Image 1 (cartoon, one colour):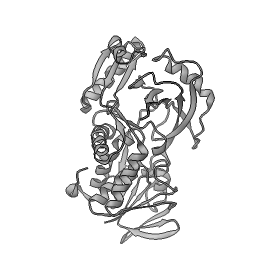
Image 2 (image 1 turned 60 degrees about the horizontal axis):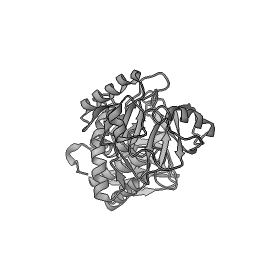
Image 3 (image 1 turned 120 degrees about the horizontal axis):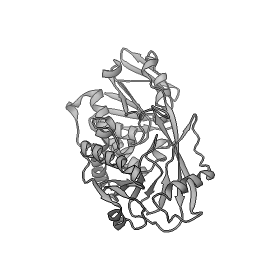
Image 4 (image 1 turned 180 degrees about the vertical axis):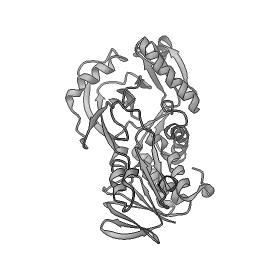
Length: 368
């Protein structure tokens, strides 16, 4: 098949790679001048374990499978990553039930190695930590997301695929031969189209002529800001508080150089705005000191912000990933990916196999 994948973020590149490895002719259309300039460039770079998500959900299934696939891919392709582990902490007795629920979900999802420990045990692992209990997730890691995308692009190109930059898609029309797509002002014909446009997924779906508008979910934007932290790292593992509405709380992550950063918070917005308000540092410090009372004054510095493409808003239950293929909408050769936020990076290789199976069937499945 000749296939167009729209969007050269982590998920789009992973999908394109999976299809190219199966022997299809694949082109990725990217509206920007380089890979991964949207969601993929503005996240925590965490390899999640899969313990947060409801059993049986796409997020749970693809996160658990994807984490194993991703680490194996990094090993085989020389992509820098580290399995540093994570502690999800209860800072007071009222939060014990929340982390116990996460443990139950993780066990149901098949996440390996989870253990509930008390505050004293947690402080043996992380002496600067304040908590009454913690869930230890030793399989969680961090990854160089740009190196990961370069490796995915390399595999895609080795398999005969290509990425076309500055190539916005403005029209998609079903024709007897397949799909006529206007890319960078030129009409091209493909057998199949994959919408992996991230923040632009809903807008792209609206450009599919004749596609039912009621089939396109609304998009809700949740901004998350990050603050860096000067000074020597106080922790060797990722530290997460009990989850909050719309996210996992202001957590401590590390980059591969060991630098600490905090975030993201949750700010519901109606437009893309990547500025970090320095005034938010006060609220960050208050949240951080619940699990790190020793946070020095004045060490938080504005770093970067990302936007999550959510399908539900404030006060609503978190939505699952949404993969709309021919079985869902009845259009052969068309797959939409909606609401692919966290843990999209972790899930990317597993999601890619799912999308390929939905499009062309499982008979040509290829190992990572």
